[in-house]
Each structure stands twice: as C-alpha cells, then as structure tokens.
Image 1 (cartoon, rainbow, N blue to C red):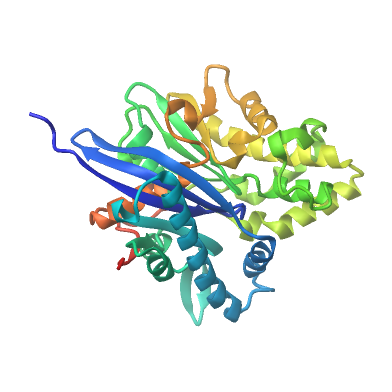
Image 2: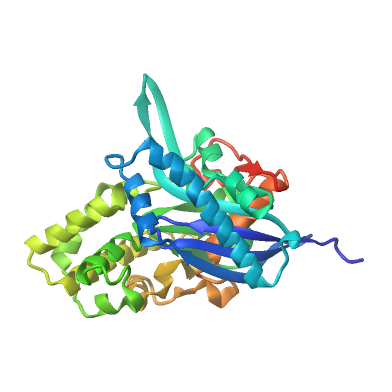
Length: 393
C-alpha cells in the first residue's frame, strides 16, 4: 500500500528588516507519513522603490513615524505584496486557481519583546504591516499573516519563528546542525543530534547585514545599498581594538530566548558606529571590514557555545549574508575545522528563498489547524496556532 500523500501549491511572502524588498516563493508542499517536504517552484524578489523604502524607514523610528502613515503604508504594502504574489505566480507558469493560499510575514516596523509599562500594565508588542485583506482582494487567494502576535500573547517574544520549520525540515539523527539566517539581523537554530522539539535552541545573535549595508551606503555616497560580494570589506583590515569595544554591547551577554531588531541595531546605531570610526581615524574600508567582523564574530561565538554539547558538525547558512564571501570567510575562521559551513542550497533549499518558503509552511500548518510555534525558541508558555486569515474570493 502507498502512504496517503497530500500536496498543494502556495506562495510565501517575506520582507525583512534589511528592507531589500519583497521575496516571493512559489512552493509545492507535500505531506505524507514521512513528514512534510517543500519544493521551490519559482522564486522572485521585488525591490521597494526608493520613496517607499524611505517612508518605511521613517515608520521604524518612533520619532518620525505618524499614525496616518502607518495606516496608509499598511494598505499600500498589502497591495504591493498582492502584486508581487500575482507576478510570481504568473512567472511560475501556474494558474491562480492552482494556488491554495498565500502566506505573508509582513513588514516589521516595531518589535518590543521586552515589556513596556502602559497605564500600569506590562505589555510586550510587535507590529507587522501589509494588510492580508488587501492581499486577498488583490489576488483572489486566501491569505494568512500576522503570525508573531499570537506567540507574544502566549508569553513569547514573537521571534524567532523560522526554527519551527528548521526542526521539521533539517534535523538529523546522527549529528547536529545549526541553521543560520543572515538577514538584517542574524539568527541561529541549534538542532542537536536526534533532538526533540523542546531541545531546539534558537535566538537572534545580533546584527546581520544591517550595519554593513549602512556602511556600504555611506562609503559609496548612496550608490550601493549593500556590500556586493563583500568586495568593499575585502579591501580593509579589522581594527581589533574597536571590535573588542563593540563586543561589549550588553545584548551579546544576554541568555536566550532573546530577539532583537532595528530598534537596537538599526540606522541610529549604525550612524553612531560610523561617527565613532571617524573619530578613530579609520579609513572607510577598515570601517566596513570591522563591522563585517562584528557580525561574524558574534555569530561564531554563539555557534561555538553549542558545538560539543549538540554534536554539531554542520552549519547551513541562508539569507543575503550567505552571498558575502568576506563575511562567510570570517565566520569559518571563527569555527572549529571539523564543522562544515555551507549554504542551504547544498542540501536542496535555496538560501535566498528559504525564509519566504518557511512562511508558506507556517501558513500551511495554520490552515491545517496545527500549532506552529516553538516555545523553546520564543519563550512562549505553550504551543499555539500563529496566524490570521483573510479568505479568498
């Protein structure tokens, strides 16, 4: 007898803290007795135009954000996400009627996992915009989104969410793996050999590309938005004294579960570092090489904490940072020789498309009425079904 197999097509949408644009992954999801498999059918990335990106950045800063613009951008991004999904579906060769659902992460403009006091009440919060009702209307396809709030309602930090999928897709019986995503922020999922769900450890290690991108932009008078192929950093040298000073940032000493974002490592922090480097009379190439090393060292330090106890033999890297050879070289330098470091492409998942694919999986589990968070990673008090739905026409 053949095991019963269930399959469907979906679109995962991701827009991260680096504000590169909208990633759209058309995926085939197959489920049988052996588990769930994701197959990438088509991947496309759609850049934000400069004015929209500028407005989103202003919304990420409480001093420049306005309620009117938050509301307006929520609707505008819903339309943009819907357009991105439509184009990706068309490019994939599939018909809209063949797509079961769209699953969108949304654009984070604020993430506050540590509680604030509001009128005597302790409140943690997060806000992702890009309205799912607009996406559903634009595409005619059922859309799932707003994942993080349910985890926070259950006492979690609403992040990181990708580790749930990492556990389902990448755990191994005989050796441990660490999954790394280097987007604007860098995060890891630790999968010890033959681990159970509650043994998974995951958290944000610190900055990913965000500070590097800012430095590349400043160095080139806004001609480049990122350090393409790590070429700018490759021209410089690490300033060890300054790096040692940067490593004293208190976040690196905090114990997981922990998460961070633009609120800590965003433009204000990057500008502060740029000015500090100028006072140290560092040339621009040494500046960007040093902040590239900051991402690499903070990541390698965290990986090394788990190598022996988790029998870690492999580190799989995804996200934009995986395309930066200088950064990848710095990471490898900080790890034991017996730990292999390579991109997730080598195990069958596109490093660029991974996060968008993961959100398709989270949406799939939600629509199946299954829990889709990982309390060991987020700190939630229990497993919950994250997501909200806008039904298609």
